[in-house]
Length: 552
Ligand SMILES: Cc1cc2nc3c(=O)[nH]c(=O)nc-3n(C[C@H](O)[C@H](O)[C@H](O)COP(=O)(O)OP(=O)(O)OC[C@H]3O[C@@H](n4cnc5c(N)ncnc54)[C@H](O)[C@@H]3O)c2cc1C
Image 1: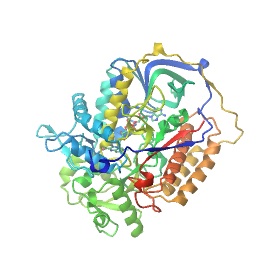
Image 2: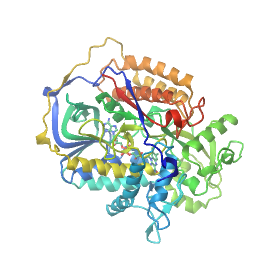
Image 3: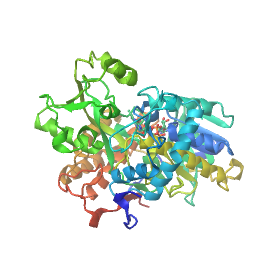
Image 4: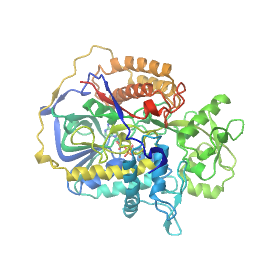
């Protein structure tokens, strides 16, 4: 067990009840709506949803839905790698200790232990299923990354690890007969009965319009929510839908205030914020300010290899000090050929902006990257709602605590995807024929308010979140953010939309409000949550989880 949690009491939780009038976002009349039946419905086709599907399909028939194509996920975008103990000179104890240390005193040691120990077998299984992990001398190559005390990051196609994993999982899922994949199915809400049991989902399918999937078990694997912020590494699908729908259904959400910002994303005005993996810093890249000075050691003795939150705040501080919009990554001293081979994605990206990495500096700045908190689960991926599991980035399993160690999220998705699928397989009421579902009729009161430009609301929200609920936080801007979001929330939640853009806007507003509220309540700095007005960690008052649940 790591230093951080050794001998400490279990972490308590403070639960907040928060008002939300709407149970569902759309009008539902289950009798006249198109319907499907499944033993298990899985929402999301990233590493967590795909892995869960393969496990559940051993014993159940599975419907797997995702709101865009199978390749539209954070998983597909993952670059650096997946952390796992494969080398003889590495140990489970070391990986556990690194994870707990990064978790800021509120990670769950039993969960960390479980994830770390299950890692190697599941990574090897991925390899057997065709994941193209990079090799050196016939063995899987491992590399070092900030926060890890051993070289344990496994990578594929150089810096396209996510694609390497996703392609293998998708191929396996496609060849599994009792998994039905439905792409372009936007899940709007989780359906629950009067006994707080999840009985399936309602969504919009490209072919059938509004559709209900009744299921004995539901697995939520909808990923993260970088789209809450103006600057993000996340693809457009990451709009916090899973968090918002779980909240409306009455699930307990946990530790939403912890949002990880990635220190180095390419900063070229007008281009999307492509991530520049930190493995690059692991392999010797420096950070320079716009005056050409190396500055990381002034902030942390670990320099460029300090954890992400430390590097992000240092970059932000140095940008303020030098009155600049960015800093630079310097890779000019690295071997050009090796760089192009090891980091083909970044090489191509830089080239597309006329940046010759052997001569030019790469302009970078931090961006929102990873939702550390999420839907609270137990050690077996079960949420507070019966028959509803959560896994991957949408879940708060206890692995990350207040901060995520790099490359641990793919690992978590893999392990918890498997656990969720296993849970469904073992569940007593697991097949569609045993399902008793009530007719559901839900009507949203008519609103006379005028048409809304949801794109404008979204852009304003993302800027507000970046300014007021970003890398560094303070009481006044947090309170102001909530007041503004509440105002937008009131009139946007009044409406019934019939397109994903509208539902995403509603989900983003809901999650933003909850997140800002949790950030205001945590009057200390811990992990990725940094309060400029409370810069110290306060174990006496705040060594606890923040839980939030819909009132009434
Ligand atoms: C650029 C980038 C680089 C990263 N690099 C690494 C790395 O090197 N190592 C690492 O460990 N982690 C990395 N991460 C984080 C990691 O990729 C994610 O945390 C992880 O892939 C999440 O997997 P997931 O299965 O939970 O969700 P995702 O992979 O995001 O999948 C979510 C799925 O849910 C679906 N979905 C969402 N909402 C709905 C809805 N309403 N209806 C239907 N479907 C829906 C989406 O369509 C998608 O299929 C990176 C992330 C990014 C963005």
